[in-house]
Structures are given as C-alpha cells and as structure tokens.
Length: 443
Image (cartoon, rainbow, N blue to C red; front, side, top):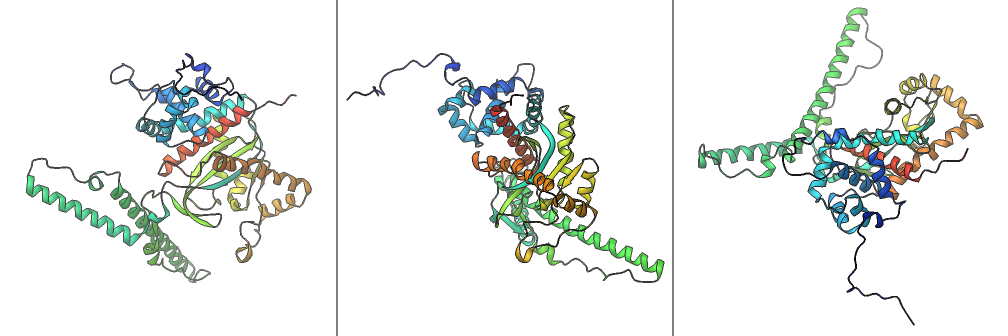
C-alpha cells in the first residue's frame, strides 16, 4: 500500500503573502474589509499625533481583532493572545503580530465606548445592503450571567461590618507606620486597603446604595403621610383606604448586594437563580438587532418604550426613515402606560394580556383596560394570531445564536456601563455575521 508522506522533519517554506493563508470568502477577510468602511476617529483620537512614546499596535488592527474574536465567541484576552500565535485566521487579522493579553484587555477597556459605537456603524452597513426592515419588530430580553458569583452576595449587616473592619485595619496600619517611619515613606499598604478600585470600594458603594434605598422608602412614606394629613385638614375626613404602614426596618437588614459586581442582581433564568443582567434587544425582520440595552431589573415591564425609543434613535442616526408600524412583545412587557405611549407613534402594539410565564398557582388574571381590549380584539382574529406568532421567529433565534451557537452566556466585564458597552459590541458582531451570510433575494 502507498500513502502520502508525513515527514514532520521536512522543512517547508510558508507562503510569503498572508493572502495565501485563507480562502477569499473567509470571515476574517470580511471583517478586515468591513473595518475599512468604518470611521474609527473616536479610537484614533486617544493617541498622540506627534509620534512621541513607544509605538502602539495599529488601532484599526486591534478593533478588527476584537470584532473577529467576538464574532467567533472568543472573548478571553488570554485566549485571543494564544490564538494570535496558533490560529491562522487570528494571525491574518493581527498581520502576524501577537499582542499580549494585557494589551488586548487594556485596549478593550480604554476604548469600550468607541467599540460599543461600532453597533451603529455595522447597522448602517446592514441598511445599505437592504437588510434593515422595521415594519414589524419584536422586543425581548434574556438573562446573561454577570462576571460575579452568586455566593458573593452579602446582606447589609455583613457589608457594614466588613467595611468597618477594613477601615479599622487601614487606620491601624497608618498608625503603626506613623510610629515606625514618622514623616518618611514606608512600605506600601496591602492592595486590598490601598487600591480604591478593589473590594473596599465595592463594599462601601454597596452599603451606600442599600442605605439610600432605605432612605428613599422612608421619604416616600413620609410624603404619603404628609399628603394624608393635608387631606384630613382640608376635608375633615380620612382618605379612603387603610393608613400606610411605615417601612419595615428589616428590609434594610435583609437587602443584599453582590460585592464583586454591585450592579448585577440575582435573577431567575429557567427556574434557576443566577447572578445576572437582563439583556434587552429589539430586532427587525431578518433578525437584525436594531438596539441593545442592559438593565438590572429582573422583569421586562418597564422596558418596552425604552427599547422602541432606542431603536428609533439608532435608525435616525443612520438615516433610515422607514417607520416602525408594529411592535411585538411577550406578556412580561405588559405596562399600560408604555403600551399606550408606543401605540401613539406606531400602528400596532401587541402584548398578550395573559402572561404565559406564570402558570399554575402563579397564573395571573388577564389585564384590563382600553389597551387590553384593543389587543384582545386583534388576537381574536386569525390574521392577528398569525402576526403575533412572528415574534418568536424574529427575536428568539437571536438569543439562541448568541448564547448557544457563539457560546456567549456570561459577560466578561463588570458594572452596568461596561456590561452595556459589551452587550452592544456583542450585538454589533451578531449583525456583522448576518451581513457576512446575507444573500440578496432576486427581484
């Protein structure tokens, strides 16, 4: 029998051109071509123009590297560094250079706002290709795990005690050094006590937020009692209803915050409790994301108008003037005021009056009111039910592709703003992949 030779000691001459390393239709070339069409002035503006200092990696290459990495679901800066050495596509993107993981991580943090701004640029490219169709849009949210463990939640007494312990340790260390060194400079404090961006700062912030929430509850109660007394003085009668109860002091004791990422919250996802953010998206026909936002509210009831406004803002920014005529959402978005506000600027808003998420003993009574009556009339017709069934086909595959196909089921950043910027970058790469695979239909 004869076989092809497999001599690993054979010396080979690699192709001298990167163009020979990947086929023409590869995603890496598409990302590089896309970057050439995007204005990166906001990124370049952070660098000195006089040429002084150590040369930095080309910002356009670094943006392309991050876009490609997120597109293929690789977000670890250490793994990106490794793949710049081992993966041919990453080597092509990086022009055969290998930025270290610290450089990659710092670039992502330094330019997080500009990277999030790529969402509008990619959306504009999708619109230019004829992919943005917004007659009917769908809104939905999904819980994505925060970069923090659920075991890092602490109640208010524990947070207060730990802050006081750390302050006492810092004071004791200062006193000991003053006695030992006087005005001279001694050894540095431990990082936990010296660095304001570490645990102590997060604990102090968590304590302040819990105390502010308790103060807000007390203020609301006092305002209610004041209005009640004014009503009695004006009419001589007690207002209807029972007198409001004072806020329970135990609420502050029982309240909890995550000391790793205080902006994240404990949320329910498919029956399990996770430390997470609620990632919102509004999606047009063809599964192009029109807007992406983050909230730490576990439910969606106040997100409908916010997301529609965000979509309209993005469409206006890219000069796409097609009107949003129908908004579809599941029952978790029921909010009479939001529905009425969106209804006033679109032709139809359909949010079921029964929330299918609540079953059994938790099943809620159907919603009432003018908006509920209007929606029920639509859903009683075959055309209305057929229209509403499009919701699942428009928006749910977006989350399935992001979380399961690309493996993005946990945020890499911490803090609300950083996580929102990352979510917008994730949404931008989703649209970029849709654009890469887009095949125009013949007329």
